[in-house]
Image 1: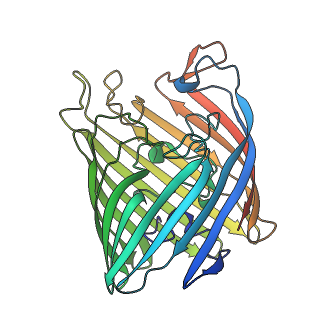
Image 2 (image 1 turned 90 degrees about the horizontal axis):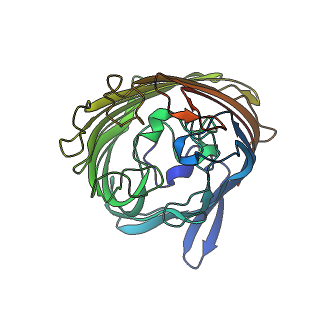
Image 3 (image 1 turned 90 degrees about the vertical axis):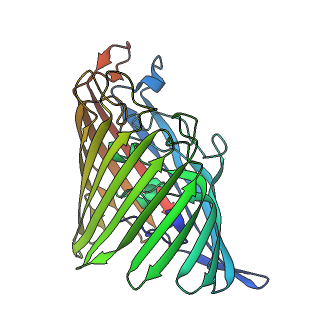
Length: 351
């Protein structure tokens, strides 16, 4: 489950590997990672139409994160910079590296945290989303590529968030200038957004329930459930229901869509086999809303066998299949196709 913690995107992966630097009167945690790999897809997405390159070697992540935890009545911060590939099932990793504010390399996210009283925090700056199971750095996820459900969710955006913690539960509200697209570009007609939600644990099941409202664009209800069955098996479910505002709905098209992603992660010692299965529905055929890239219905399957030689390194391969009832992909001759097969291998070092 995506956790609402000050370490942000690197939570769940780098905390155990993080080092600490003492600067003047502050303790600063240093973490991050470097990953690289080979990416291949038999068909390409329209953004890459005309390209004859269906495979490439890429630096998929080079990220350095610094953070300092706030104390009651004090301030802390989290900041990360570097480069991320953001490989999705749509592009198969055949894309350009992106930072959020600067193309290729730059600030990924960063915010200052104010803790005026116990159990209450205020974050302001370039925030990371609380929506969805997957998070922004690929080495923090069980799979190399990001799924179709993740692709339609909020990502990183400037804004402010207030969070109240009560026992095992967190409640938050936020306002932002989210532009409504994965890489932060001007894609949708939104001029901002707000969100409310809660995260916690009930009967041993981690949950996250959120409502996200893009101004004059669309609305999103997101539910994440996750649980470690035992030390050898993790499972999770991410369900989204989204609908367009009247100002964004196209005449003659539907106004809603939904997506569900199921994650099954069997593990044994240094080996794991993350499996992701998704179903997307974007409305009636020929009347798609556009929320899920104009696929009236589609399913995806992703397998990512992973080996960790040490606790902070990994070698993993991946094979994925995307099948749609709409022809949204193109082969090397630019002929439209309704399916896509991708493969990749990635090596990672975390610090």
